[in-house]
Image 1: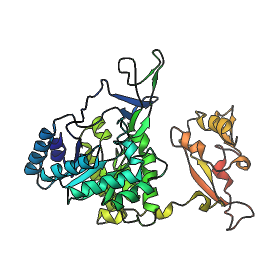
Image 2: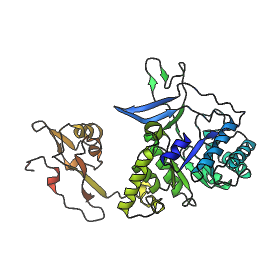
Image 3: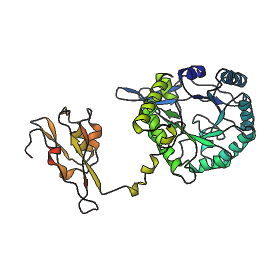
Image 4: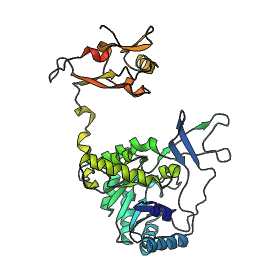
Length: 394
């Protein structure tokens, strides 16, 4: 699998997490489930896997072979120990095997011990201790992999840096229950009639991943911290979003499980076209530049108001905007039974844009901008025709 990834054009791989031989890995079956939305599969993906099942000697031999056959490709060894001595020993072993970098798995949500997995990632002191232990066993760059099952990562990130980590990876999977089998009353996947909380990945976790990435980047002293972005990257647009918020490398797994290694072509080609459009010669010039436009909510412009604009040539009269506005917003959208088209009452509109979000054909866009009456700024002139029905007089 690692060779196939390299051959497909990926710059590097993170080798499945290695743990001490005394830690027995015995996986469940089935181990996956998915979250769907209407006819859309793989909105999110739940997995119950733990760590590498191979004997340590086999994994190390495979790493040596990979590095020999692909000397110019990046090989990152993921490790997880129970004790500081475990962490030191594992670091020594993967360093000797030829790894270019080590990722410390402080975040696997499937582990049952408080000294392993995501419980470690919520404990700054334990993370610091483990980072110190790893640095005793290696001179390689070290990434600490963060858990999203926490309110803020900042204390943990800073503790890892104090322990010697050179950067972080964010995020690992989100603890979750995806679906319940309504007939058998058990969460999925069902393992002989039982299930458990486990990790969610895929497109649905991207907003969570981006939020934590921005949180790290906005923290004092972490502005230049190397961050490897993870969580819901499927398209080049997803990749660009992570880069714009400060990720300098990207990791992809769930999308590969769904589409295969070939998606690297879409990712790289799309990013190259985007760079060309932006007039950027080096991808690093895009890293983090969107963060300046993300503010605390109390600093956003409360005077700004933008109304919807309906493209009547696209409107199919389905009524989605009417129903959503009537039942979930401010009743600004009405309905003309004769013309079978929506109507619009500007006096009731608050500019929330729910109507645009639910329109299935993209017939509603951002339209006229006004500054709220009596507020700062010059009120824009309203073009009433923006909101008229076809051939309407008013």
